[in-house]
Image (spheres, rainbow, N blue to C red):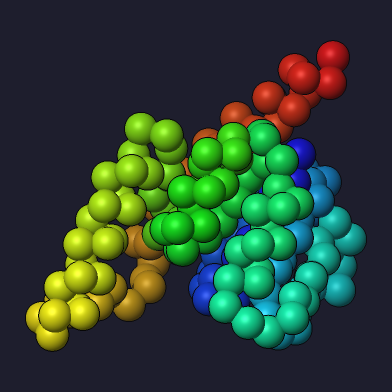
Length: 157
C-alpha cells in the first residue's frame, strides 16, 4: 500500500499531514510532479518523482503505477476519476473523498462549470486554503489511510 500525491499543486499543509503519517506508520509515499518537490530529510519512506514536463504527465505516472488499495491525494477531478475506477482511495486537499458513488456527479459538475467559463460566465474560484480545510483533510485522510492499511493487511494474510 502506497500513498500517492499529485504534488504540483498540493498545499504545504497537506504534504505535512501526509509526511507525519507516513513516518509514524512507515508507509511509502510518492510525490509526483513536473518539477522537483522537497521532501523532509528525515522522511525515509517519502520520495519524489519528477516526470517530464507536459500536460498530464504526473497524472499518467500515478495512474500507471498506483494499485488498487493505494491512497491518492489530488485536486484533479479527471485524475481522481481514473484512480477511483482503478480501485484507489482518493481524497482532495480539502478533505473530500472521491468514491465510485460520488465521482461521476463531481466530474459532471466540473464539466458544466468549465462549459460556463468557456462561454464567458464568471464563476469565481475556490476559497483560499485555510485551517478548516486542513482539519477536514486530516480527518478524512486518517480515516482512509486506516481503511487502506487494513485492506492491505487483510490481502497479505
